Image (cartoon, rainbow, N blue to C red; front, top):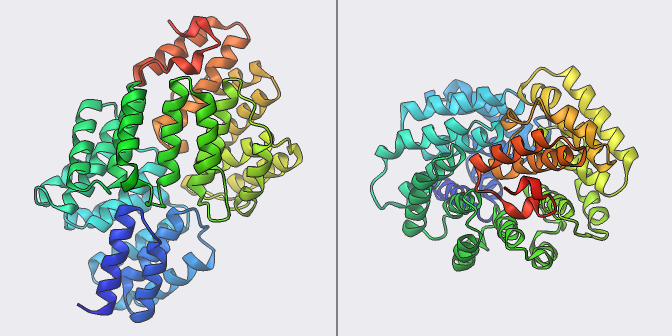
Length: 426
C-alpha cells in the first residue's frame, strides 16, 4: 500500500472514530501526493464541518487544488469536488445531496455516508439521518468494523425520529462490534436521555468511558450527556464539577466543545445554579468565531454566552453582524439565520433581561419548527425549556402545559427541568 493510501486509511479511521486529527493526517496525504483529489476534497469538507468559513485558507486552498485537478477526476471525485465546494459556499443542503448521489453509486462508500450524515445533522434533517444509513446497511458485512460505524449512524437517526427501541438496539450492536465507536455510544446516550433513563445513562457512559474519553472529537460532548443525567438525578453540584473538570473551554476546544459548555451553563442557570464567573471565562474562546457565521446554531450559542457574561455591547455587535450576513447572502445557513437564528437569539436575550413575555412572543410560533437551526433534539430542548419557563412566569399556564406535553411526547418528562414549576410536572 502506498504512503498516500496508508495515510488516507488512517484519516478515515480517525474521522469515523472521532479521534486524533484526521485533517492533519489528510494534509500529510496530499503532501505525499499533490494529485490526490479525494484527499483535498475531504480535507476541505472536514474543515467546513468543523466550523471553518469557506473563504478561510484551510478550506479554500484544498478546494482550489482539487478543482485544478477536475479534468482528471472520475465521477466520484467530481461529486466530492462539487459537494465540498457547495458546503464552502453555503449550499449545505446541496452538499448533502451530492454526497448522497455518490453513495447511490456505491452504497459501501462509507466516506460519502459519513460526510452526508454529518451534514444532515447540521441541517436538522432527522429523516435523512435515519434513512440514509439504514438504506446502505446491506452493503456491509455482519460484524465488520465498517458495519458497526454504519449502525452507529443509523442508531442516531432512529433516535432523532423517535424510534427509541430500534435506535438502542442498533447503537448497542455498534458498541458490541467496536466499543470505541463513540458515535454509536453517543447515539445510545441520546436514547437514554430522551427516555428519561438517567441512571441507565450514567451506567452506560461510565462503563464505556475508557473507550470514548480518548475520542477528542466527541469526548466533551459525552461528558455533557453525563452532566445532563446528573442534572436529572438532582446532582447539580456534581454536574457543575463535571463542567469544571471536563467541559470548560481551553485553548484546544473545538466549536462543539464551546457549544456544550454554553448549553450546560444555561441549563444549570435555569435550575437556579449560580455559575459564578464561568460565562466570563467562556466568552473569550468564542471571540475567534463571532464573525464566521458558518452555522446559526453556533451563533445562537455565541450570543447567549456573551449575554451570560454581561457583554451586551458584544452581543449587539454579533446580532448586527448576523443580520448583515443574512441580508447579504442567499445560502442555506443565511436563510436559517434569518428565519430562525436571529429570532432565537432575540428570544434568549429577552429571557436574560427577564422579558419573559418577549421570549414567549418570539418563540411561541417557532418552537415546533426549530429543527433546521441544527443540533439534536436533546440540544434544541434548551430552547423549549426556556420557552416553557417563560410561559409559566407570565402566567400563561395553557401554553406552559402545552409545551410540557410536547416535551413529554419527545422525551420522558425531564422532571428536573420543571423542578420549580409544579404545574408543568404533571
